[in-house]
Amino acid sequence: MKKLVTSLVAITCASMLLVSCGGKKEKAADAGAAKGYTFGAEQTFRSEEKVTYSMFFSDASWYPKIETWESEGVFKDIEDLTNVHLDLTSFDSGDYNQKVNLAINSGSSAYIIPKIYSEDQYVAGGGVVAVSDYTKYMPNFTAFVEKYDMAADLDTIRQNDGKFYRLPGLHQAALQDYTIMVREDIFEAAGYNVRELEKDWTWETLHDVLVGVKKYMVSQGMISESDYIWSDLWCGESGKGTGGNLLKLMGSSYNVLSGWAIEGSNGGIKFDYDKKEFYSSSVSEDYKKFIAVANSFVKDGILDPETFTQADDTANNKFYNGKTVIKSTNRSSMSNDIASVNKILGEGNAKIYVTAYPSGTTKNLAETSRLECGVMIAQKALDELGEENFIKMMRFVDWMFYSKEAYTLTKWGPEGKTWQYVDVDGMKVKQLLPGYKCGGLGIGGADSDTDIRLKWGYACGNYFYGHSTAESTDNFTPDVQDLYARYGKYKTVAKVDPKAKPTEDQREQLNLWAVPLIDNINSWTLKFITGQKDINADWDEYIASCENLNINNIVKLTNEIYKAQ
Figure 1 (tube, rainbow, N blue to C red):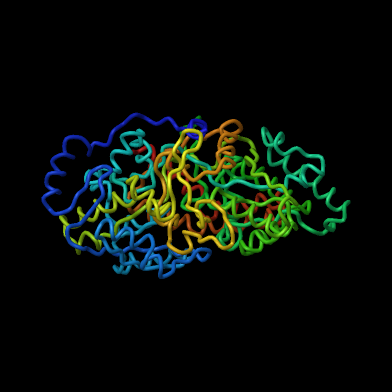
Figure 2 (figure 1 turned 60 degrees about the vertical axis):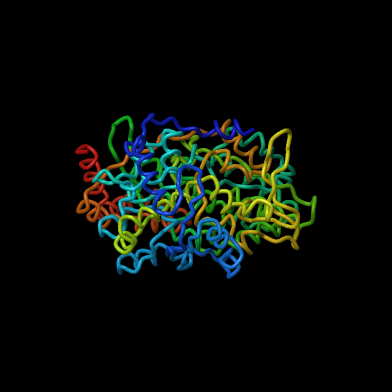
């Protein structure tokens, strides 16, 4: 099964090595050893004297950080191992990026800045370090890049100066996280075999199936004609006004950027490999087809338009209570989703199936990159620590975000405290000890069980991401492993777009154009989908509004930058 999971999304990259690796590593190691701390690939970082590094923390409301995370949980574990105390400044995840931006611009940033998806807006101001200058001091990072030929992947985040300013999460292979789950028992009762349908279904097929499912439910008195059978999460409040996860999934199926995917894209900019030039997917015929299909779910009484404004709990509760039959999920949520349905409706009264989501004009997965969100380092850290102590901090960052030891610790907790190895079919696998569960790992349990994320902060998205396929899937249940096997059979991985690398002045100009343009695209998209605007009658007005907001200038400048590289 692990072979299936690994192979399903493998991306072939150019076999290139980082120029900063090689013989310099041994020389740096000798110098570092004399400074009172150890480092090296898969060595525990340990500072001889206690040190404190400041770090931002994106605090999620659905698993908020509490005092025990620092007094007896993950941060105490880190300190006990490394002699590094992390001085945390927490911001609510909903406005984390905004607060981080303000702090960097005001010169009051923490040293370590995790959970950053795009660094472009921070580069011009000089508030963050060009971390590519320091990867030669990061043996875990460089070893992973070499082992999995990731130099070409890192090239996609290099700026015009040839450097990159974010240490990304590194994946051996791209892994699709988000998909949809359905009430299989109701689909079956309505005459639909979703396990056969998912092999080659499209969003149009799903629409027709859901129309049939609703018709059946109305005929059985389960719902009224005015009820919706799909009310989704990660689209409203957590979708940030963009349509979030659902429109990202649907958009990728039509080779366009929408929802979460349009953020940082300068207006849906994609690359046409046939023409070898950039274009805006947001004004393409594919985009028009995508929003027409999305609108059909709302227009025909399937998808509740409140999906795009409501809180996530609202959507979850409707599904758990049996009022809807389909919703989005991901690998961290699906076990809890299934357990919640069984708890409310009664064990055995509902059958849930997690599907490979439909295709559109392509069968591509929404995830294409082997890079994930990552860590920036504030220029303030270099200024205040000085070069030697800054390099020492980078050794710690390398251990915390790129070593197997830290990955296991921050994801699962200490071996023997929260988990143990067990033998399953001759293989050693990690398993939580009795009395524990973890929403962040997708491992459910009894109400009385202790959730190791809620109590101690393990499996928190701030500090574990990336790593090998074996490591990133070591918490997958057989159901999740089966889902990834089906992805491998039914879906494909798109080629990653190249990067146009603007100068600081060019980036500033692109940002000035892109911010109002993206707001306009998102606003029109939701109006089209919810029926406030007519796709055919108002399409030309939409195109004109984008042109008035410099979409053509963005495309032109992006191509000029790319061709001049």
